[in-house]
Image 1: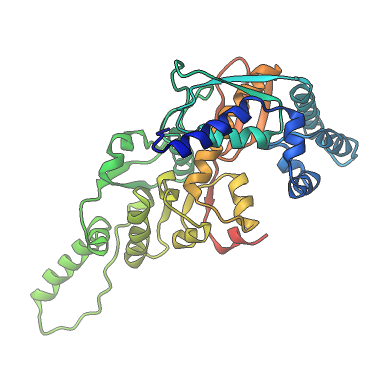
Image 2: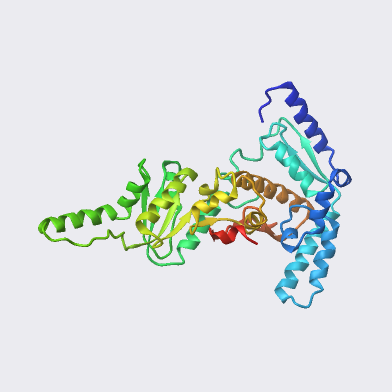
Length: 367
C-alpha cells in the first residue's frame, strides 16, 4: 500500500485502528438492516460459502437436518457443516498478524466485517507481507496451488474427457505455462499467437489457407471448368484451448468460428475473465467453456454486476482469511462453496480447489 497524501494516510490508519478493535458486538451494531435481511434469507448454498457467520444459521442447518428427504451422505455433510459453524461461533477471539502496508489491507478489513466474527488484527510494520501481490497467479498460504494452476487442472480434466487432437493457442504472456496443458488420451499442438489479423491467423492454424491453396492448384489444371468450393478446416482437431488475454480472446473466438463454426469445442483459461467489468461481457464468449465457480454463477444470475477480476481477487482474499479462521477454530475438514471454486479444507494438509468449467450461454444470466 502506497501512502501519497497525509489525508489519505489518516483515513487508512483510522480504518486500521477500527479493524484492530473489531469484535462481534461491534460488527452487529454497525450492520445495516439490509445486511440482516440478507442473513435471514440465506439458504444452504449461502451458509456453505462460509463467508459470513450468524447464530441463525445453526437453526437453519438443524431444520434441514430434521428433514426426512435427505440421504445419509447429505445428513453427514450437514452435521459436519453445523459442527464447523458451532466451533467457529464458539471461539471468542481470532487474531491475524499483518503489515499495515500490506497491499490488500483495506479489502481484508471489509472481509472481517463481512465475516461478522471477533477477528482482531495485530499490525506490525516489521512483519513481511503474507499475501502475494498477484492473488491469481501466486499460491496463497494454506492452499496446494494458485488459482491459475487450479484453472489449468480444470482444463486438463475437461479436455481429457474426449478423444481427438487438441489445439492450444497462446500469447507470449502465457508461454511459460503451455507445457502444463496435458491430455490423457489426445495429442496436443501448441501455436503461439503472433499476428494482428485474427481472421487470417485463424484461417492459417485451422488449415483454411492450405485448403484454398490446394483448390487453386487443382483449378489451375483446368481453368475452363467451374468447380464449387468450400474451404474445409482441419479434421484432426476436436478441441481448442486458448491461453490469451481478454481482448485477444474476444477477437479470437469469432475468427475461429468464422472458419470452423461449431465444429470445435472452445475452452478458455481463467485469464479470459480478467478485465471484464460487467458479467454481461461474457456473452461475447457464448458457447465456449470458462472456469466459473457455482458461487460466481449464482451472483451473475442474481444480476450482481461486478468486475470479475476484482471478484476473483476478493474471493482469494476471503479464502485466505477463512483458512485462518478454520485453523484457530479447530475445524478439521470442510467443503466450502467458495467464490473461486469448491474448496476442500483439511487441517492435516493443504486446501484443494476445484473449478468447474461452465458453458457460457444466455442461461447463465437467468434464474
